Length: 333
Image (cartoon, rainbow, N blue to C red; front, side, top):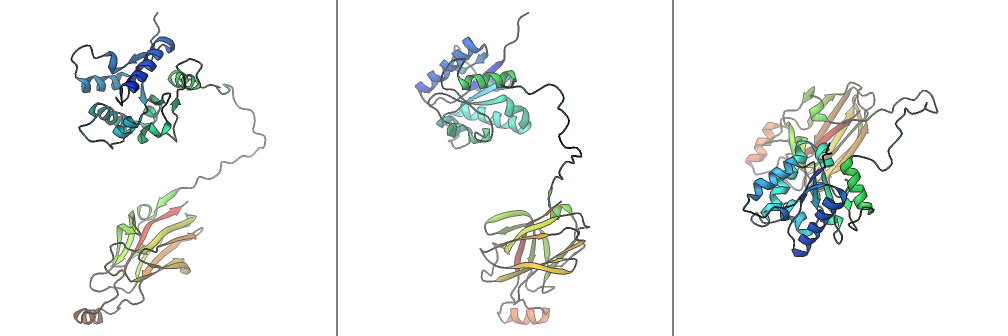
C-alpha cells in the first residue's frame, strides 16, 4: 500500500530572481529529501493558467502552507503594498488571513512561517505572529539542520521529546485546591445601574486620546438637571476589585474645566481624583464584600439652579457644564 505524503503549498513573493531560485531550491530539497508533495508556482507555468483559481485551490487542498518570509512578502501580506502590485501574493495573503480567522487554532498549526538562509524573522508577516508563535529558520538544506528537523516534526505532529504516556504519580502534598481564576468584567456590560442621574449616559467616551467603548459620561446641555452626575451599581458582595480611568472628555467644549470624581462603597467615600483635559487619573479600589458602588462626577463651578443657569446663558456667561467620563470601568472577581 502506498503511504500518502503530506501535501504542502509554497506561498511566497517574487522579490527578485535570486529569491525565486532560493525558494525553488528549497522546494526541490523538500521533494527529494524530506518526501513532501510540494506545489510551487514555478512548476505549474507550462501552460496558460488562471493563477488566482490555482492558488485558491492549492491553499484549500494543502495539508500545510509554507509561508516564505521576505521583505516584499511581509509588505504585501500585511497590506502595505499598492493594490495593483504583487496581486498574486496579496491574494494568497487574503486567503491565509481568512483561514486564520475561521479557525485560529487549526490554521496556526497548518500555516508554517519559513525563514530561509539570508532572511530574517522580521520579514515574516505580522498577522502570522512571528514572535509569539513558532517559525522555522532554515540554515542549510540538509536533514540534520535544526530548522528542517523542527519543520518535519511540525508536519508530522511529533514532539522532539514526547512526554510520558503513563499516569502521573501522586502529588507530593495532599489537599491541593486549584487557585481561583480572576475574571475581568466590564461594569456596564455586567450590571445594570439601580439608579442613574438624568445627565449620565452609558456608551463610548474618549479620554486622553484613548477610545473607551463601554464608558460612562456625565454631560449636560444648556444646564444640568442635577449638580452632580451619579450612577449606582449593586455589587452584591460578588467582586474583589474595581478600576477605571477618569478624565475630561476629549471633545469637551470647555478645555479649561476641572473635573472631580468620587467613589462611595456602601456609602463610605474612598479616594477619588481631580482631573483636567489631557491629565486623566486611574482609580483602583478594593470592593470585597461591598454591596453598593456609587460613582460621582462633578465640577465645582456648575450652575446648580436651572433658572439661574438660563439667566447666565442669556447673559453670555458660562454655566460650568461638566464634560466628564469614566473609561471602561471594570470589576474583578
